[in-house]
Image (cartoon, rainbow over all chains, first blue to last red; front, side, top):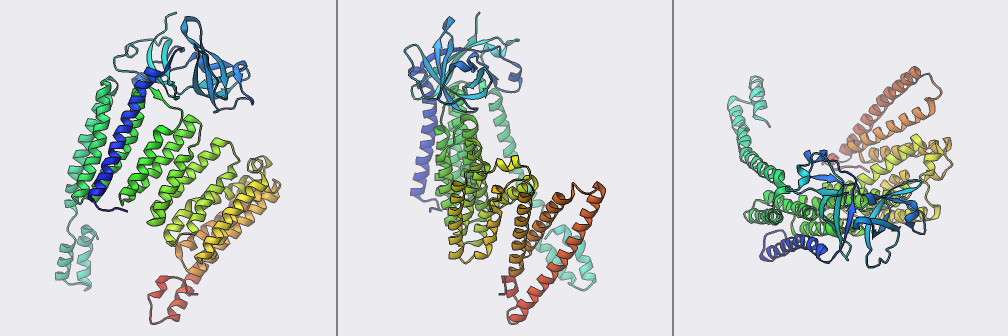
Length: 176
Length: 423
C-alpha cells in the first residue's frame, strides 16, 4: 500500500480524478443523448401545488398516468407494493399518453407506443398507484411557473432512451 | 494538565511541602495557558465562514445559473479539492490533505446527483451511484488514512439505502464492494473504529436486504453472524471484538425482544423461516466461527452464540418466553464467568448489566399480571437494590482476590497484574 506521495502514486490519483470528471461529463452526455435518441411522449399532470417552491427548488408532479385500473395489470402473479413494473403508454387524445397496460416483464411496444419504467406504490381494490421517479421537477430560474399564482395542470414532455434512462425535457401549461 | 488547575491548586501544594516554590514555577512554565490554541483556530473559522458564504450564494442562485456554468462549478470544485489535497499532502500536512481528498470524493457523489438533476434525468438501476462507491474504495487503498477508509463504508450504506428505497432493488455490487474493500482493509490494518463502522455499515445493508425481500427478519442474523465469524479469524483481539460488537448487540436486542413479546404467537410467527434452510445456514456460519475460535484459542467466547439459539421455533406463549429468559440468564452468566476468569473490569460491568436486565425482564414477565401495581414496583425496586449490592460486593471481592493472587504468584513482577489473567 502506498503511503507517501510518490510519482506513481500521483499518477494514479490523477487518473482516478480524470475518470471522475469524465464520468460526470458522461452523465451530462447521457442527458443530451436521451433527448437525441429517445422516444418522446407527453404526460398530463393534475394541477400542481406551487407553495413548495418557496422552500424548495422543485415541485411535485402528480401524473394522471400515476393511477391505472387494475384491469390494466398484465402479470402472472398479482401486483405487490414496491414492485418494479413496465408501463406501456399509448398516445391518447391531444397526443397525451395513456396507460395501455402495466407489465411485470418488459413488453414489446408498437411503433407509436412507448415503455416507461415505474414502481407500484399502492394496490387498491380497483386501481394501481404508480410512481415513475419523474415526480420531482426542478423548476429552472426562468420558468413561468416561478411567477404563477395558481398551479395549472401541466403537460410534461418526457424522452425515454433505448438504454432505459428517462428525462423530463420540457414542461408547459396544459391547454384544455 | 490545565494551566488554570495548576494555578489554583499549586499554592496549596507548596504550603503542604509537596513541591517547592521553584518547582511550582517550573511546572507553571511547563503548561502555558491555552489561549494560543484558540487564536490558532481563528483562520480556520474564518475560512469556513468565507466558504459557507460562497456556498450559499451558489445555492441560492443554483436554478437560474446556465447549465454549462453549473457543470463547470461542480467539476471545478471537484478538481480544486483533489488538487488542494495533493498539495497539502506533499507539504506534509496529512490531516488537511486527507480531509480535502475526502471532500473531493464527497463532491464526486454530489456532482453525479446534481448533474442528473440538471438534466432531469432518472436511471432505473444503481450504476450511476455505483461509480461513487468504486472510487471511494479505490481512494481508501491509495491513501493510508482512517477517514478515507470510513468514507466508502458510509457512502456504500447511503447508496444502498437510496437503491432499496427509491429503486426497489438491492445492489449486490455495492455490498460486495464494501465488504471486500473495507474488509480487506480491516484485515490488513486492523483498527477498532474502522471495524465497528464496517460492521454497522454491513448490518445496515443486511437489514435493507431483509426489508426489501420481505423475508422473515431472522434471516438478518445469517449475514450478521458472518460478520461476527470473520472477527473470530482475526489475530488482533481489539479489532476483532470491535467487529463483533454490532452483531452481538443486534442479537442481544433480538433475544430481549423475544423474551418481552415472544408470548404472542403472532410475533413469533413473523420470525419462523423454513426450518432446514435457516438452521443449515446458521450451522454453517456457526461452524466457521467455531473453527476460527479454535484456531486462535478463543473458545471461551463461544457462549456468545447462546443468543442465536432458535427458540422462536418453540410454540409461542409462556414456554417460549421462559426459554428465552433462561438463555438470557445463561448468556449473562457466561459473560460474568469469563470476566471473573480474566479479571477485566469492563467485562464485569457488562456482565452485571446484562444480568440485571435479564432479572428485570423476568420479573416484569412473571409478576406484572399477578401483583398489585404499587407492590409490583416496590418489590421490583427492592429486588434490584439488593441485587446491585450483592453483585458489587462479589465483584469487589473477586477483583481484589484476582489482583492479590496475581501479585502473590509473581512477586518479582508486580506489573504483571496489569497484563491480565492469572490462570
